Length: 79
Image 1 (tube, helix red, strand yellow):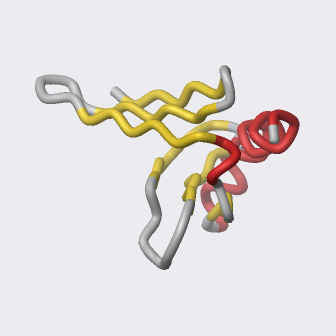
Image 2 (image 1 turned 180 degrees about the horizontal axis):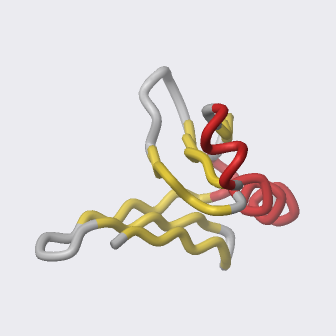
């Protein structure tokens, strides 16, 4: 199971069923929020969300989320 929560000045991404992985990033620290969509993902309205805070390695790589542009707009509205 995967989930993204945007609120309280941070973006949280959690994944996993038996073992959990949770990553929190302060929105003020985000340098780049990238939306990546293949042709098929665009048809189905989903995509990948990649969050960078510093450097070339992303802090969050969340794949296959519905309405990724709405998530980006939510993050942008809180910055």
